[in-house]
Image (tube, rainbow, N blue to C red):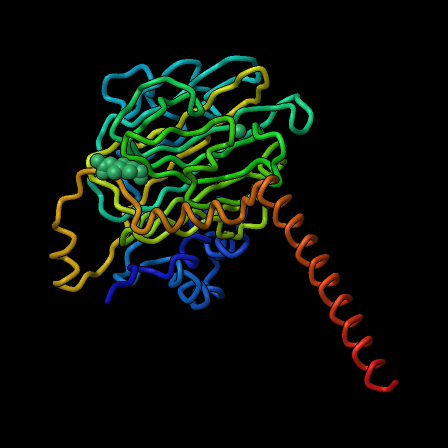
Length: 354
Ligand SMILES: *[C@@H]1O[C@H](CO)[C@@H](O)[C@H](O)[C@H]1NC(C)=O
Ligand SMILES: [Ca+2]
Protein backbone atom coordinates (compact mmCIF):
# COMPACT_ATOMS: atom_id res chain seq x y z
CA UNK A 1 0.00 0.00 0.00
CA UNK A 2 2.97 2.37 -0.13
CA UNK A 3 4.95 3.98 -2.88
CA UNK A 4 7.41 6.76 -3.29
CA UNK A 5 6.51 10.09 -4.82
CA UNK A 6 8.74 9.48 -7.83
CA UNK A 7 10.58 6.53 -9.34
CA UNK A 8 13.81 6.72 -7.41
CA UNK A 9 16.27 5.90 -10.16
CA UNK A 10 14.66 8.33 -12.52
CA UNK A 11 15.11 11.42 -10.43
CA UNK A 12 18.31 10.30 -8.78
CA UNK A 13 20.00 10.30 -12.12
CA UNK A 14 18.74 13.84 -12.52
CA UNK A 15 20.04 15.07 -9.22
CA UNK A 16 23.50 13.84 -10.06
CA UNK A 17 26.06 16.50 -10.97
CA UNK A 18 26.15 18.12 -14.36
CA UNK A 19 28.12 15.30 -15.97
CA UNK A 20 24.89 13.34 -16.58
CA UNK A 21 24.26 13.79 -20.33
CA UNK A 22 20.50 13.36 -20.05
CA UNK A 23 20.21 16.12 -17.47
CA UNK A 24 22.64 18.33 -19.36
CA UNK A 25 20.42 18.04 -22.39
CA UNK A 26 17.46 19.10 -20.30
CA UNK A 27 19.25 22.16 -19.06
CA UNK A 28 20.83 23.10 -22.38
CA UNK A 29 17.89 22.59 -24.71
CA UNK A 30 16.59 26.13 -24.84
CA UNK A 31 15.85 26.60 -28.53
CA UNK A 32 12.19 26.86 -29.59
CA UNK A 33 12.65 23.92 -31.96
CA UNK A 34 13.40 21.74 -28.99
CA UNK A 35 10.69 23.21 -26.85
CA UNK A 36 8.25 20.31 -27.15
CA UNK A 37 10.91 17.67 -26.63
CA UNK A 38 12.21 19.73 -23.73
CA UNK A 39 8.83 19.54 -22.05
CA UNK A 40 8.81 15.79 -22.52
CA UNK A 41 12.32 15.52 -21.16
CA UNK A 42 11.66 17.64 -18.11
CA UNK A 43 8.74 15.49 -17.02
CA UNK A 44 10.76 12.57 -15.61
CA UNK A 45 12.85 15.02 -13.59
CA UNK A 46 9.83 16.05 -11.59
CA UNK A 47 7.77 14.29 -8.96
CA UNK A 48 4.19 13.09 -9.40
CA UNK A 49 2.84 16.30 -7.93
CA UNK A 50 4.57 18.26 -10.69
CA UNK A 51 7.11 20.09 -8.57
CA UNK A 52 10.83 19.69 -8.67
CA UNK A 53 12.27 16.96 -6.45
CA UNK A 54 14.64 19.63 -5.17
CA UNK A 55 11.80 20.73 -2.93
CA UNK A 56 12.33 17.59 -0.90
CA UNK A 57 15.90 18.62 -0.20
CA UNK A 58 16.08 19.46 3.48
CA UNK A 59 18.60 22.25 3.69
CA UNK A 60 18.82 22.11 7.45
CA UNK A 61 20.22 18.57 7.26
CA UNK A 62 22.36 19.14 4.18
CA UNK A 63 25.94 20.26 3.93
CA UNK A 64 26.90 21.78 0.61
CA UNK A 65 29.39 24.25 -0.88
CA UNK A 66 30.34 26.91 0.03
CA UNK A 67 29.78 25.56 3.56
CA UNK A 68 28.65 28.95 4.77
CA UNK A 69 29.61 29.52 8.39
CA UNK A 70 30.22 25.84 9.14
CA UNK A 71 32.34 25.55 12.23
CA UNK A 72 32.45 29.30 12.84
CA UNK A 73 28.98 30.83 12.80
CA UNK A 74 26.45 30.18 15.54
CA UNK A 75 23.71 30.10 12.91
CA UNK A 76 25.35 27.19 11.07
CA UNK A 77 23.56 23.86 11.16
CA UNK A 78 26.83 21.96 11.52
CA UNK A 79 29.67 21.68 14.02
CA UNK A 80 33.23 20.70 13.24
CA UNK A 81 35.36 18.52 15.45
CA UNK A 82 39.03 17.52 15.65
CA UNK A 83 41.05 17.99 12.48
CA UNK A 84 38.02 18.68 10.26
CA UNK A 85 38.69 21.74 8.14
CA UNK A 86 36.67 23.75 5.63
CA UNK A 87 38.15 24.61 2.23
CA UNK A 88 36.30 26.03 -0.79
CA UNK A 89 36.22 22.53 -2.31
CA UNK A 90 35.44 20.20 0.57
CA UNK A 91 35.27 19.53 4.25
CA UNK A 92 38.52 17.70 4.90
CA UNK A 93 37.82 15.36 7.81
CA UNK A 94 41.43 14.24 8.04
CA UNK A 95 44.55 15.16 6.09
CA UNK A 96 46.91 12.46 4.79
CA UNK A 97 48.80 12.41 8.10
CA UNK A 98 49.04 9.87 10.93
CA UNK A 99 46.75 9.79 13.98
CA UNK A 100 44.17 12.38 12.97
CA UNK A 101 40.52 12.40 13.81
CA UNK A 102 37.88 14.67 12.41
CA UNK A 103 34.13 14.91 12.20
CA UNK A 104 31.22 17.09 11.24
CA UNK A 105 27.91 16.85 13.12
CA UNK A 106 24.47 18.22 12.50
CA UNK A 107 23.15 20.45 15.27
CA UNK A 108 19.53 19.62 14.55
CA UNK A 109 17.98 16.30 15.54
CA UNK A 110 16.19 14.57 12.67
CA UNK A 111 12.51 13.76 13.02
CA UNK A 112 11.91 12.64 9.43
CA UNK A 113 10.37 9.22 9.02
CA UNK A 114 11.64 8.40 5.55
CA UNK A 115 14.72 9.96 4.10
CA UNK A 116 17.57 9.52 1.73
CA UNK A 117 21.08 10.88 2.08
CA UNK A 118 23.36 11.41 -0.85
CA UNK A 119 27.02 11.68 0.08
CA UNK A 120 29.70 12.95 -2.25
CA UNK A 121 33.19 12.26 -1.02
CA UNK A 122 36.78 11.64 -2.02
CA UNK A 123 39.37 9.42 -0.37
CA UNK A 124 42.89 9.86 -1.66
CA UNK A 125 46.49 9.74 -0.48
CA UNK A 126 50.13 8.94 -1.08
CA UNK A 127 50.08 5.44 0.43
CA UNK A 128 50.20 2.36 -1.82
CA UNK A 129 47.23 0.01 -1.87
CA UNK A 130 46.49 -1.37 1.61
CA UNK A 131 49.05 1.02 3.08
CA UNK A 132 46.41 3.59 3.78
CA UNK A 133 43.67 4.02 6.34
CA UNK A 134 41.36 3.95 8.09
CA UNK A 135 38.31 5.22 6.24
CA UNK A 136 35.24 7.22 7.09
CA UNK A 137 31.76 6.75 8.51
CA UNK A 138 28.32 8.27 8.14
CA UNK A 139 26.12 8.41 11.20
CA UNK A 140 22.61 8.84 12.49
CA UNK A 141 23.02 8.54 16.23
CA UNK A 142 21.68 9.68 19.55
CA UNK A 143 25.13 10.91 20.52
CA UNK A 144 27.08 13.62 18.72
CA UNK A 145 30.51 15.28 18.93
CA UNK A 146 32.14 12.35 20.71
CA UNK A 147 35.52 11.01 19.76
CA UNK A 148 36.68 7.45 19.84
CA UNK A 149 37.98 4.43 17.96
CA UNK A 150 35.16 3.87 15.44
CA UNK A 151 36.39 5.95 12.49
CA UNK A 152 36.83 8.82 14.90
CA UNK A 153 33.51 8.36 16.71
CA UNK A 154 32.76 6.74 20.06
CA UNK A 155 32.26 3.00 20.46
CA UNK A 156 28.98 1.64 21.88
CA UNK A 157 27.08 4.24 19.92
CA UNK A 158 23.29 4.29 19.68
CA UNK A 159 21.93 4.35 16.15
CA UNK A 160 23.13 3.74 12.62
CA UNK A 161 26.67 3.70 11.28
CA UNK A 162 27.69 3.24 7.64
CA UNK A 163 31.40 2.54 7.31
CA UNK A 164 33.68 3.05 4.35
CA UNK A 165 36.54 0.95 5.67
CA UNK A 166 39.70 1.39 3.60
CA UNK A 167 42.06 -0.81 5.61
CA UNK A 168 41.68 -4.59 6.20
CA UNK A 169 42.59 -5.09 9.87
CA UNK A 170 41.72 -8.76 9.92
CA UNK A 171 44.73 -10.84 8.85
CA UNK A 172 43.17 -13.40 6.58
CA UNK A 173 40.54 -11.21 5.05
CA UNK A 174 38.91 -12.78 2.04
CA UNK A 175 37.26 -9.48 1.22
CA UNK A 176 38.59 -6.85 -1.09
CA UNK A 177 38.96 -3.43 0.52
CA UNK A 178 37.77 -0.65 0.65
CA UNK A 179 34.65 -2.27 2.05
CA UNK A 180 31.34 -0.61 2.89
CA UNK A 181 29.23 -2.02 5.71
CA UNK A 182 26.37 -1.04 8.00
CA UNK A 183 25.75 -1.49 11.71
CA UNK A 184 22.75 -0.71 13.92
CA UNK A 185 23.42 -0.62 17.65
CA UNK A 186 21.53 0.15 20.86
CA UNK A 187 24.48 1.32 22.93
CA UNK A 188 25.59 -2.10 24.12
CA UNK A 189 27.29 -3.57 21.03
CA UNK A 190 30.96 -2.97 20.35
CA UNK A 191 32.30 -2.25 16.89
CA UNK A 192 35.12 -4.80 16.56
CA UNK A 193 37.88 -2.86 14.87
CA UNK A 194 40.28 -5.83 14.66
CA UNK A 195 37.74 -7.75 12.57
CA UNK A 196 36.56 -4.73 10.56
CA UNK A 197 33.18 -4.84 12.28
CA UNK A 198 32.26 -8.26 10.93
CA UNK A 199 30.56 -9.61 14.06
CA UNK A 200 27.97 -6.81 13.99
CA UNK A 201 27.59 -6.02 10.33
CA UNK A 202 24.20 -6.10 8.62
CA UNK A 203 25.59 -6.36 5.12
CA UNK A 204 28.23 -4.85 2.92
CA UNK A 205 30.16 -4.76 -0.31
CA UNK A 206 33.50 -3.95 -1.84
CA UNK A 207 33.78 -0.37 -3.09
CA UNK A 208 36.95 0.71 -4.86
CA UNK A 209 36.67 4.37 -3.98
CA UNK A 210 40.26 5.31 -3.29
CA UNK A 211 42.45 7.44 -5.56
CA UNK A 212 39.96 7.55 -8.42
CA UNK A 213 39.65 10.48 -10.82
CA UNK A 214 35.86 10.68 -10.94
CA UNK A 215 33.36 11.71 -8.29
CA UNK A 216 32.25 9.08 -5.79
CA UNK A 217 28.78 8.93 -4.24
CA UNK A 218 26.95 6.94 -1.63
CA UNK A 219 23.23 6.81 -1.20
CA UNK A 220 21.75 5.83 2.14
CA UNK A 221 18.01 5.32 2.03
CA UNK A 222 15.80 4.69 5.03
CA UNK A 223 12.27 4.08 3.91
CA UNK A 224 9.54 2.14 5.68
CA UNK A 225 12.10 0.69 8.07
CA UNK A 226 14.19 -0.57 5.19
CA UNK A 227 17.83 0.41 5.00
CA UNK A 228 19.36 0.45 1.54
CA UNK A 229 22.86 1.57 0.64
CA UNK A 230 23.79 2.19 -2.96
CA UNK A 231 26.91 3.56 -4.55
CA UNK A 232 27.98 5.34 -7.68
CA UNK A 233 31.74 5.02 -7.71
CA UNK A 234 32.69 4.05 -11.26
CA UNK A 235 32.04 7.46 -12.78
CA UNK A 236 29.17 6.07 -14.86
CA UNK A 237 26.28 7.86 -13.11
CA UNK A 238 24.82 4.52 -12.25
CA UNK A 239 23.66 3.36 -8.81
CA UNK A 240 24.71 -0.09 -7.68
CA UNK A 241 23.19 -1.72 -4.63
CA UNK A 242 25.51 -2.49 -1.75
CA UNK A 243 23.18 -3.64 0.98
CA UNK A 244 19.46 -3.84 1.63
CA UNK A 245 18.09 -4.73 5.07
CA UNK A 246 14.41 -4.76 6.07
CA UNK A 247 13.10 -4.36 9.61
CA UNK A 248 15.52 -1.66 10.72
CA UNK A 249 13.99 0.41 13.53
CA UNK A 250 15.57 3.76 14.24
CA UNK A 251 14.11 6.17 16.80
CA UNK A 252 13.55 9.79 15.84
CA UNK A 253 15.51 12.73 17.14
CA UNK A 254 18.98 11.44 16.26
CA UNK A 255 21.82 13.41 14.65
CA UNK A 256 23.48 13.03 11.27
CA UNK A 257 27.24 13.13 11.19
CA UNK A 258 30.34 12.09 9.29
CA UNK A 259 33.66 11.18 10.81
CA UNK A 260 37.04 9.84 9.89
CA UNK A 261 40.28 8.74 11.49
CA UNK A 262 43.82 7.89 10.50
CA UNK A 263 46.26 5.76 12.51
CA UNK A 264 49.70 4.57 11.49
CA UNK A 265 48.34 4.72 7.95
CA UNK A 266 46.51 7.70 6.53
CA UNK A 267 44.55 9.29 3.70
CA UNK A 268 42.80 12.54 2.91
CA UNK A 269 39.15 11.99 3.73
CA UNK A 270 37.23 14.72 1.96
CA UNK A 271 33.52 15.19 2.33
CA UNK A 272 32.21 17.22 -0.58
CA UNK A 273 28.52 17.23 0.21
CA UNK A 274 25.76 15.65 2.22
CA UNK A 275 22.31 16.09 0.73
CA UNK A 276 19.33 14.95 2.70
CA UNK A 277 16.00 14.38 0.95
CA UNK A 278 12.72 13.76 2.63
CA UNK A 279 10.87 10.85 1.03
CA UNK A 280 7.10 10.86 0.78
CA UNK A 281 5.53 7.51 1.51
CA UNK A 282 1.81 6.89 1.31
CA UNK A 283 0.76 4.73 4.22
CA UNK A 284 -2.45 2.86 4.84
CA UNK A 285 -4.30 3.74 8.11
CA UNK A 286 -3.06 0.46 9.64
CA UNK A 287 0.50 1.28 8.72
CA UNK A 288 0.04 4.76 10.17
CA UNK A 289 -1.16 3.26 13.44
CA UNK A 290 1.71 0.82 13.61
CA UNK A 291 4.14 3.67 12.97
CA UNK A 292 2.79 5.63 15.90
CA UNK A 293 4.26 3.09 18.28
CA UNK A 294 7.19 4.93 19.74
CA UNK A 295 10.53 3.24 19.15
CA UNK A 296 12.96 4.00 21.93
CA UNK A 297 16.00 1.93 20.96
CA UNK A 298 17.46 1.06 17.56
CA UNK A 299 17.00 -2.57 16.57
CA UNK A 300 16.89 -4.89 13.58
CA UNK A 301 14.16 -7.53 13.23
CA UNK A 302 15.53 -11.07 13.12
CA UNK A 303 19.00 -9.95 14.13
CA UNK A 304 19.91 -13.48 15.36
CA UNK A 305 19.16 -14.69 11.85
CA UNK A 306 21.58 -12.17 10.36
CA UNK A 307 24.20 -13.24 12.86
CA UNK A 308 23.69 -16.91 12.00
CA UNK A 309 24.21 -16.22 8.31
CA UNK A 310 27.33 -14.29 9.21
CA UNK A 311 28.78 -17.19 11.20
CA UNK A 312 27.90 -19.79 8.60
CA UNK A 313 29.93 -18.28 5.80
CA UNK A 314 32.84 -17.79 8.15
CA UNK A 315 33.52 -21.51 8.90
CA UNK A 316 36.66 -21.46 10.99
CA UNK A 317 39.88 -23.29 10.09
CA UNK A 318 39.45 -25.72 13.01
CA UNK A 319 35.92 -26.69 11.92
CA UNK A 320 37.12 -27.17 8.38
CA UNK A 321 40.07 -29.34 9.54
CA UNK A 322 37.84 -31.67 11.57
CA UNK A 323 35.22 -31.86 8.84
CA UNK A 324 37.86 -33.05 6.37
CA UNK A 325 39.54 -35.34 8.94
CA UNK A 326 36.28 -37.11 9.83
CA UNK A 327 35.33 -37.41 6.18
CA UNK A 328 38.64 -39.16 5.43
CA UNK A 329 38.29 -41.49 8.44
CA UNK A 330 34.69 -42.22 7.41
CA UNK A 331 35.66 -43.14 3.85
CA UNK A 332 38.59 -45.26 5.13
CA UNK A 333 36.29 -47.22 7.50
CA UNK A 334 33.79 -47.80 4.67
CA UNK A 335 36.54 -49.11 2.38
CA UNK A 336 37.88 -51.46 5.10
CA UNK A 337 34.36 -52.79 5.82
CA UNK A 338 33.73 -53.28 2.10
CA UNK A 339 37.03 -55.18 1.62
CA UNK A 340 36.32 -57.45 4.63
CA UNK A 341 32.76 -58.18 3.45
CA UNK A 342 33.97 -58.89 -0.07
CA UNK A 343 36.64 -61.26 1.33
CA UNK A 344 34.04 -63.20 3.31
CA UNK A 345 31.62 -63.36 0.41
CA UNK A 346 34.38 -64.68 -1.84
CA UNK A 347 35.36 -67.33 0.75
CA UNK A 348 31.73 -68.41 1.04
CA UNK A 349 31.28 -68.75 -2.71
CA UNK A 350 34.54 -70.74 -2.92
CA UNK A 351 33.26 -73.17 -0.24
CA UNK A 352 30.04 -73.59 -2.17
CA UNK A 353 31.86 -74.57 -5.36
CA UNK A 354 34.25 -77.10 -3.83
C1 LIG B 1 20.68 -4.38 22.62
O1 LIG B 1 21.14 -5.24 21.59
C2 LIG B 1 21.63 -6.50 22.04
C3 LIG B 1 22.24 -7.22 20.86
O2 LIG B 1 21.42 -7.22 19.74
C4 LIG B 1 20.51 -7.27 22.69
O3 LIG B 1 20.98 -8.52 23.16
C5 LIG B 1 19.95 -6.45 23.84
O4 LIG B 1 18.83 -7.09 24.38
C6 LIG B 1 19.55 -5.06 23.38
N1 LIG B 1 19.20 -4.25 24.55
C7 LIG B 1 17.98 -3.77 24.74
C8 LIG B 1 17.78 -2.99 25.99
O5 LIG B 1 17.08 -3.93 23.93
CA1 LIG C 1 39.38 -1.66 8.98
